[in-house]
Length: 182
Image (cartoon, rainbow, N blue to C red; front, side, top):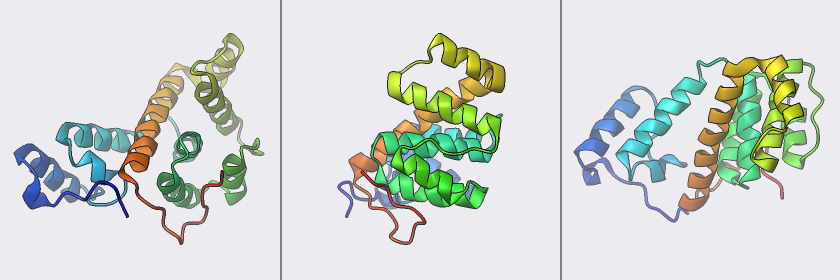
């Protein structure tokens, strides 16, 4: 049971209703998960959906975005987005063994050097709030500036997702391929 009720379109102001209609027309999320909270602020909802759309077509691969998403929502102990992102990650081609290693806080065994660099930079950023000079040089060498910037932005996006899900109080899908562990 959520702590914030889903907002019905009839209860939305004009801005919220316009954003609702556009998101629905674009195939976006309406009335469940963190979107329950976003609906209460049209501009926040709009920005978050634009950020989601950008992450589908940025310099990071879909697998890399999912690595970031899983690490970030795990950091915030956000069970609903963990389950949703685990499903999306597996569908994107990320191995369930890597998903579960992230869930356990273990170092995954990556075949791809760039995926490993994304994991390392995300781990350091979530753990310290910055990249050390060594961490920055490693990310710069493997990922380049654009992907570093988009990695930071993706962390911010999934911080919002995880925190909103926690505040709204949404519960994960029991059929998800992975459930968040403590």
